[in-house]
Length: 286
Ligand SMILES: Nc1ncnc2c1ncn2[C@@H]1O[C@H](COP(=O)(O)OP(=O)(O)OP(=O)(O)O)[C@@H](O)[C@H]1O
Ligand SMILES: [Mg+2]
Image (cartoon, rainbow, N blue to C red; front, side, top):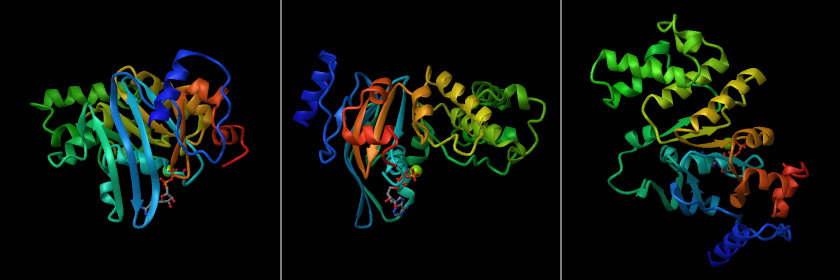
């Protein structure tokens, strides 16, 4: 930890070309921590049975920022993302140690109810997964079960606002009674984003949200992410370095369960300090 702090000070106080850190060194380089974080993750280890999937990861998620997580397949991006809203609880053999806080509150604390937690920290998956319900009910379901609407007018308002924020309203406002599963893939993904927004989250987690979408639908979702950042913190896992560069302010590079490097997106892509990051972004690995 001491060394990490030294490096952080160094990176903040001056700009110079760093000596690239060797492949063997697995300590995180860059700036893992931010002022006024929304979420803090400290010394996170994750195991599936006896296999360790994440090793001693510490990183913050800032307010109104998009943090992208990149790295080769199997390096632990989805595993780490799922720690952030306790989605790994649903996997029997998965065990997590360390501390993750949302606004200073330990989300693994004994008193935490995971149902409202997963509304506060919403998730959008790789494959759009609307409920087998109408477009309206897809968005209204969460606010209903969380008691966020006092009456039908309130609920209508939440549904409309969420669909507008998700950039879907104009396209579907005249067919709210039709099934959500009847929309195009890109529309379904925006519907799922509207569903996440409807319960007033603070953080939205996205695991490769565009990997099943065509370039136009992808552009829609990317624009949306940039818009949503004004209100939420977003963590996005992506295999597209172009996407990470377009939408995120900070980038975290994972390799075999280690958080190798994290910092400002532009800096990470133009001036990587770890040999493994450089190998990955120049296409020599993964
Ligand atoms: N449910 C599970 N049970 C057992 N092992 C798992 C499970 N999920 C993931 N793992 C293991 O944990 C490691 C990290 O997997 P993870 O899915 O987090 O990687 P990833 O970076 O998201 O990969 P990809 O880019 O392919 O989605 C892998 O070795 C994987 O086999
Ligand atoms: Mg994954």
